[in-house]
Image (tube, rainbow, N blue to C red; front, side, top):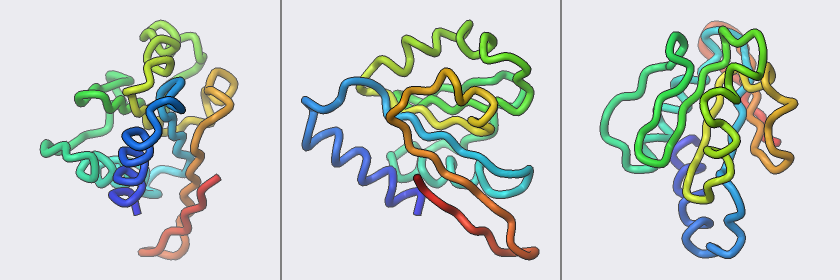
Length: 131
């Protein structure tokens, strides 16, 4: 699913550049171990990024070309994210921003975003919803 989503976003950005007013922002929400980082790793592969991504839990943000990966697990205040030039990052149309634990900074996210919720269902299954 993540690779397909990445491909579709890239196609849309290319086909309709006039609609690219800001970054594509994707908020991911779910408990520890629900699959957020794994989803982002597959998304990056779908964008053609070859290296393996690791979660930026301790550094807060990592950049891979025009893909930004944020992990807000340790965030206490959204000001911490704003200090990383977050407003500038999400204003650039070529950027794609994926945010783990996005619910912690929901109030500073743009209105136009993709929201993905992960729920653990049993030991090996996940329910993923998009909105």
